[in-house]
Image 1 (tube, rainbow, N blue to C red):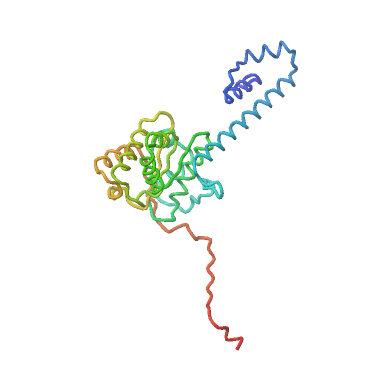
Image 2 (cartoon, rainbow, N blue to C red; image 1 turned 45 degrees about the vertical axis):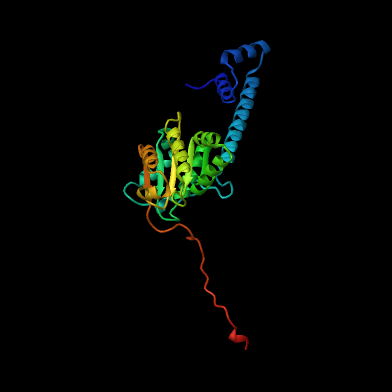
Length: 263
């Protein structure tokens, strides 16, 4: 069924959080004796304002996310053709964001340069483009953030801030060791996020097998409990192969020394 111009205005108004019904608009049109062109013009203005609002929301989400704005990592500029394997379609399907709506965590495991962080960032950016918040930080940054929170008595606010985003990305697990208190805070975040309502997921990247993560966290009992929460309903992509880095690099061999031709 084709939407009427009144329905279009109502949908745009709803996106702008304006309480407006088609009956109300129709009554106004009759009262002011508006022409069909006038109604169409009103609909055009509302659609323009709706798009401006969406753009502002996306811009705010991207700013909050800490994802790179210059040379952004997207699914469009990720070379999926370099990835092979019988389950490759599962990786190619992550741009659908089904993991977010299914509340399914993900982990990208593999050596440096195979695209783990690119994929995580691309997912986070796609979430932002849907008008939802993502937040990206490296494990070392998270560790320092939790240490500073303890120092300045801001653990509650920092923890809440890491629970709120629809997508939380922790990059390079295994690059540092979390002390006992930071481990407990971190796993409280995982626990609270597992009970969070609405579309949400966490993404971990690491060049270390999850079976070895224990040595990077103090307090083994908390670790096992929290990781059970994370991996209970998750997808782990183990990517093997050669590094993407430097694939466009031009190597020029030169030799330093006296130019014998000048003698």
